[in-house]
Amino acid sequence: MNAPLVMSFDLDDTLWPVEPVMLAAEGEMHAWIQERHPEIMQGHDRESLRRLRGALAERFPQLAHDMTFLRHRMLTELFTAAGKDDAHADEAFEVFYAARNRVTLYAEVEAALKRLSARYRLFALSNGNADLRRCGISQWFNGHVTAISAGAPKPDIRIFSRLIDEAGVKPHQILHIGDDPQLDVVGAMQAGLQAAWLNRNSKPWPANLPQPPRIISSLTEID
Image (cartoon, rainbow, N blue to C red; front, side, top):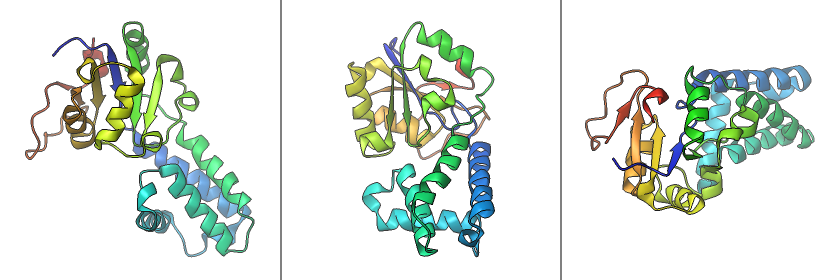
């Protein structure tokens, strides 16, 4: 593996565990709606709202990668159907989004980003809609490429091409680190990037995928 000039990092489940973040964010949003507009939540729970977002992704396939659009549109349609001003959707979404960016980094992440940013240019590469500044880590990154900004999610080559363009280097000069075998590792390799699989929990590598060039269990192993 050649020494890279740039490192890119997935965010959710790579720099922080995402499930508790999303559960808390959805819980805060639901509680906010229930307190101020209880009629909106009648007949709905977490799972029914997720199904609504899934239906929206089918209705708007060209925006299925845009998590911000899907959640905001779902809220807008809920408030509109109840005869409410759709400005309330903006408020509800902000409650969700503030909590969505209230993350708890894995133990080694802050020190690793600080150390690596002194030697490499760092980019975030994510299918999600986390905000680096709100998450408190923007100071270590030179850029953030999202599925929204690229118009396609990982493992689509378009998001990796957007990263390559923004980084201004050759594909093989970027090392991408992420937790998802298909989205992060195979996607990066197919785009010509170096790749490392961050496997924090000793999961087996999927038998149907080509072997990853590098496996790590912590960012402390990246130098």
